Length: 114
Image (cartoon, rainbow, N blue to C red; front, side, top):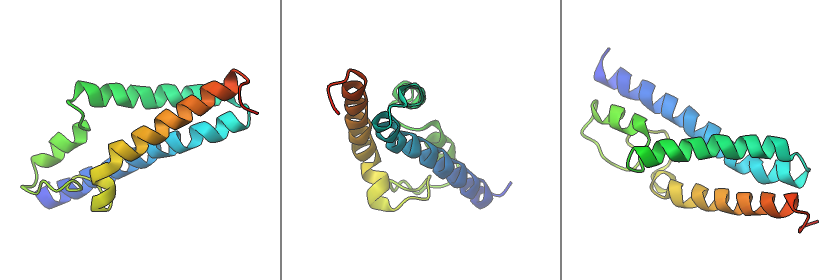
């Protein structure tokens, strides 16, 4: 496989994985708002598994290391189809959204929020 094709393939897979986890994070408070705490809990567990994978890989997605074999480019979005600003601040943005969603879910589950 040509390096350019391999890199494009990795970027597509990485973008799909990112969209899946971003969707999970955004869906957590929605399910909590509607009282679907089992579903919210499953989504939280899925995101925590991804957090564990990132933690075990020095804070990087394993696909980043694979993509690095196919290019010298090291911009924040060299391995994914995201705008540069979003790739750069992705962990801050979605980490914060996850923390807020988790807190909201816990408060709703405990009946502390209507």
